[in-house]
Image (cartoon, rainbow over all chains, first blue to last red; front, side, top):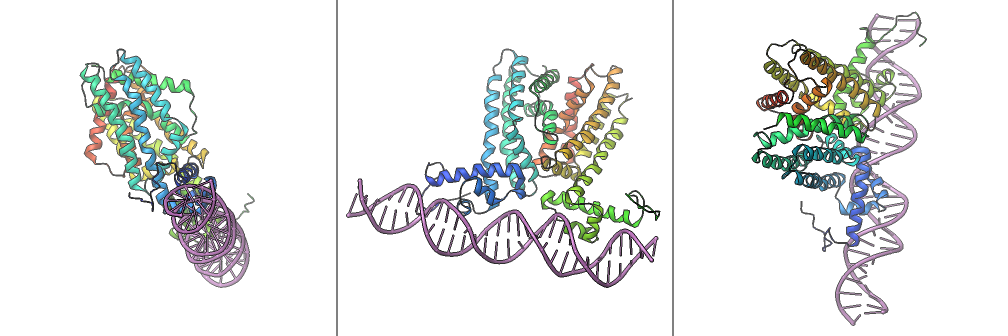
Length: 214
Length: 214
DNA sequence: CCGATAGTACTGAACGGTCCAGTTCCTGAG
DNA sequence: CTCAGGAACTGGACCGTTCAGTACTATCGG
């Protein structure tokens, strides 16, 4: 909410204060992602940030606030990725090819280790911080889906997809695409060979096009 | 190892020892599910189990072993559920109806709060206990999928489904069905209204049958 | 009788958060 | 440019609490 500093070292400036703040957030990301909320130590955050503990507590009132600040900062990223990826497909000439390409890129973006770990972290702490989970879901998840749905809506208007609820179609597409690899990544280790990912993307695209052919 | 001839308190017996062990595991389930691994206290486990702390440590060498034992004990459940549910569909006369029914039951089973919390817990601790995550994935997840795949294989043999890789088909079915509500449950609160769940089940079944019609 | 258990006190370590004394950096007035 | 003053920062000690795991004695039950 309203964190106003005494003078005016606004966060986006490159003042010393802003630099320290960045360092702290970066360090916190590292530590929280590695150990989870309870496992993370503020001493370690300070140490990794090369900053004194006092400074950490000057910028963030307590551990909880540092954590929520950190998570909320990242919710914007997912949507940007989706927009970037979905942009090309709206006015495609070869739907199967371009949708397959979208599937591959989407999968690639979501399977990045950092994204996976962040997902794990938010899920893990979702009942300690219900608001945070909901915010991440709405601002990261549903916004991305809505973007994709808009794209599918245009494809329906052009007669390239069966007319249905575009949001449902988007969810079905993503479900077909991500269910297998994301679960694998959540439970078993992180790595997923590129070739296998591409195969899954192709299979999901095929199934989706069969289900949503005009 | 060197058990004398004096009885033999094997865990499956109903000896006093076995009862205590059960009490401990039940209490541990409660505590771990509520607070996560790090947040769980062995004192609380002992207290809820109505057992002294010493007894806990007689049955389980340490916190870690208690946790893994607890999780591994539950992996058999999911498969049983799947078998029970999938059994009816193999020799159906009305595929759309019975597959819809399977979808509803499956969704109902997986959205039970306890199942959701267990899922969260395993995901949360998946990098602290990699073996545990993998075991859960293989014994709970893949076995369930394999069961469903066997069922779909029979449907393909009978010409009721398009011939494809049955395992892939099973994954696609589950992806269409569970993606939306499971993500919602993981991030936002637990509750999901029955009517909404049924609607999702029907939509997923429709889309699946369109994609996998013969 | 003998092993399992209760009850409880204890150890050693970690952690969140505070406090303080001394240092560095930025800014603005002369 | 110089320099003083104040804010931000450092480093580390410190407090109160929590927690895993152990020790030990008294009790219980088969």
